[in-house]
Image (cartoon, rainbow, N blue to C red; front, side, top):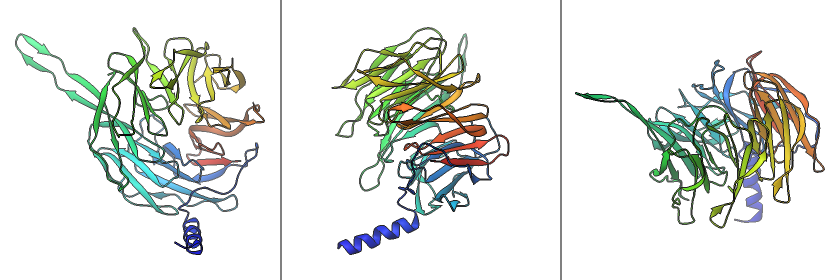
Length: 405
């Protein structure tokens, strides 16, 4: 194609909003809030640039929302967001995830895992099937929407064969599917069993998939933290053990860097948060991120910063120094009710899970600024990967709002 023709095509895509690089933004000051939608919802998702937003429409504030998907598109500081629109074919959706470019949206519902494509500024196709399995309860997608991992739950009824009673049982299994260059999805392949008490609701799912789609980490059925890597040949490696656990207490906050080379997590009913790095096909010895009693943890996309909330209601942030996380700098108060902590390479935000003050800190010149209040009665906040957009639902006016910088 001639250069002139290419420029015309790119200009057309920008006019339609299909290239979601977004208006130029920056600085350390958050602007005044703008309404995204008067339609309340949960499981809010943002594209990397913060120009595309999606959520599950529901009036419920519980951690397990179901409902149709609504979306909105950010035009400019002056024009704000488009009117939100309901995506076709998304009734009773359990969870969603946007691709980094805001072009595709994964939907998990009673039909299994499905994928929709954005065709115009805020117009989407009806989702098409990736994996048809009503037993899927949770799924994660790579940033480029080419890899999906999912957990299925199968329940076997109890039976009575006198004098023996066989109680009912529940089996959780981790599977994966990949999309080829022609857009066709592979049949799902089984990676490994999953711990039956693993948590797949809300802010602390029992598995993590790297944005690259090359690394997945989960809690195995023997209560061992495990991983599998996707090879260049398209096959997943056998599960590799990271750390084994016994006794009470589940693993929470399993987070991976974008490339899958750094992992952090913490354990319920135990002190501290932990980290390890992947290199040359193996994980390094487990090290501490902090010895605080952690209630949530986040990891920056580049894997060089960790942030967490502790039992004293403080939110701390630490950078990598000489291969280890520094002690941690307090940047604000998180409150007593287990705040959700969000982190990009340049911004940090948190709000209490039941709805409370939404605070944010911005990184400037290598240091983190004191936190500022950006929203009230906020629940289910989302931070764009570029750190320049925050979106949240309000339990006060039941609207969805945003701030940008």
